[in-house]
Image (spheres, rainbow, N blue to C red):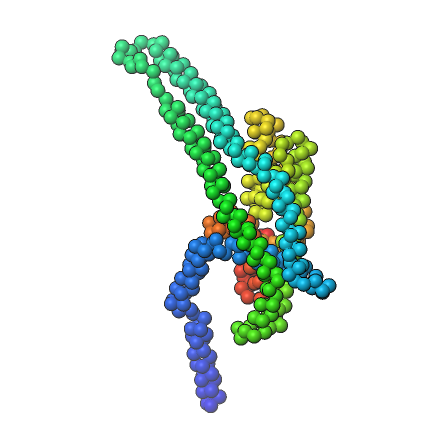
Length: 394
C-alpha cells in the first residue's frame, strides 16, 4: 500500500509538473506586445536617423576590414595612427583617381539623359503612330465593306472624321518619361553634397576606429560587468572579424575583376566609355541579382544610344550577361563555398527592407550586414533555426 501510494504521489507530482513547464514556456501577452513595440521602435529609429547610422555602419565594416593590417603593422613598431593613415590613403587614392577619370563621361551621360529620353519617346511615338495607322486602315476597310451594301439610314451617317485619343496618350507618356529623366538628374545633383559629406565623415570615423577602437574594446571587455565570459567575447569578435573581412575582401576582388573584365571586353568590342561601364558593373555587383539586372538595362541603353535601334545594340548587354553568368554560377560559388550561402529569397526580401530603410546605400550594405548577422548567430550558438532559414536553398 505504501508503495502504491508513493507511486500515486509521484505520478501526481509528475502530472502537476507538466503545467508548470508549460506555464514557464508560455510567454505573457504583455511581453509579446512589448517586444513588438521594441522592434517597431528600432525600425523607426533606423529609418529616422539613417543619415547617422549609414556612416557608422559603413565605417565599422571598413574598420573591421583594415584592423588586422593595422595590428600587423604594430608588430613592426609602426604606430597605429601612422599605419591607419597610410592604409586609408592607399584605399582612397585609387577610388579618387578612378573618380577623376570617370567624372567627365559620367557628367556627359547625365547631361544627355533628357536627349536619350526624347529619343526613346520619339521611337515610342513612331511605333504608336504605325499601330494607329494600321488600326485606321482596318476600320476604313470595314466601313467600306459595310457601305457597299444598301443601308436605310446611310443618309444620317456622321461624315466627320473620328478623332483618336492616341495623340493625347502619346503626349502624356512622352511627358512622363521626360519628366522622370529630369527628376533623376535633379535628385542626383541634389544628393551629391550630402553624399560627399557622408563620405568625408566616414573616412574620419574609420581613422579614429582604427586608432582608438581596439583599446576601447579591451577596456570594455575587461572592466564592464556586462561581459561575463571575457575570453569567449574576445574569441567571438576575432572570429567575426576574420570571417567578415575574408568575405568582404573576396567579394570585392571578384567584383573588381568582373568590372575590369567587362571594361576590357567592351573596349575590345568598340563600346564608348568602356571604363565607366566596367566601374559601374563592378559597383552594382555588390547588390546580388538586382545589380546584374540594372547593369544589363544600363548597357542596353548605352548600346541603343551608340548603335541605334538595331540588333547590334544588344551586344554590350549580351557580353556582360555572359561574363556575369560565369562569375555568379561558377567563380563565386567555387571561391566562397557553402559557408557563406544565403537563400536567394531571403536576399531579395532583405534588399527590399534595406532599400526602404536606407535607400541605395542601404541596398549596397544589405548583404554584408546580413552576413554579419549570420556569422554572429553561428558563433554565439543561439537562434540556430534562423541560421538554417537563412541558409536554406542557398
